[in-house]
Amino acid sequence: MGRVQDKVAIITGAASGLGFAAARLLLKEGAKVVITDVNREVLDSMPDRLNDFSQSQFQTLFHDVTQEDSWVELINKTENDQGKINILVNSAGISLGADVVSTDFDIWKKVHHVNLDSVFLGCKYAVPIMGKYGHGSIINISSISGIVAGWNTAAYNSSKAGVRHLSKSVALFCAKKGYDVRCNSIHPAFVNTPILDPIKQAFGEAEAIAKLSRQIPMNRIGDTDDVSYAVLYLASEESKFMTGSEIVLDGGLSAM
Image (cartoon, rainbow, N blue to C red; front, side, top):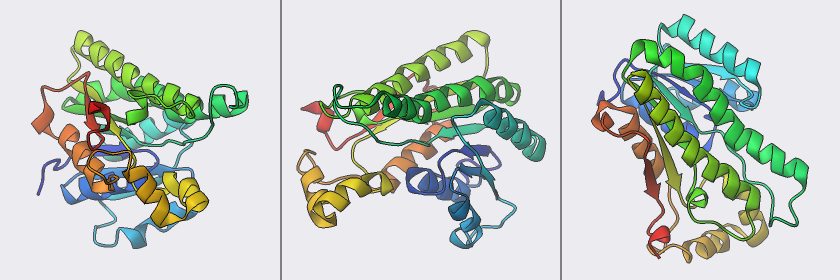
């Protein structure tokens, strides 16, 4: 207990999936967490879903990660309300599109707005604030698709590869400026979250999970805890010498 005691964290896309799992674990380990999402209905249910924590430990805010003014408002409000910002987890993301020929340009832009532009905006506005307080950690949720490409996911591959290299650039900038702020990325393979819903709808849940598992040397897909414990490690002082790097959680897929 207490691995991130009294730290203040912002987690985007935290109404469900990886973001929600990370929020629960950071709360359990002593952090105060600002949970943001564009799903107002799910945000409103957070007090019931997190009823084992005091409502003084978490705050829910509507936040469109693609909008610059929404980021400015979020960062300013969090600093004013909580007195500091130590952790930023850029978890919001979507998976749309197809191969490079079939992907509509509007879909290409939407995927990059949500998956990559949002990370840029979060880092741009959080870094100067986090630099004031130190012991900072930015954790960007990328994907194994940012390292190993697929023929039929052009926009997703591109956006997640961009997150990986942007994270390195941010890490080097913080080091050069003398900020005590680290920046790393996490690269999961398939994880059982709502992002897999289209595949489950197409094949049925059991067959979809079996189909994805066959692509993984460990013959299973990930669960949210596999990722949230990596978030916790990067958020804590246990990883104080790790920056500009990545944690790959893919069951051996990229080793093939």
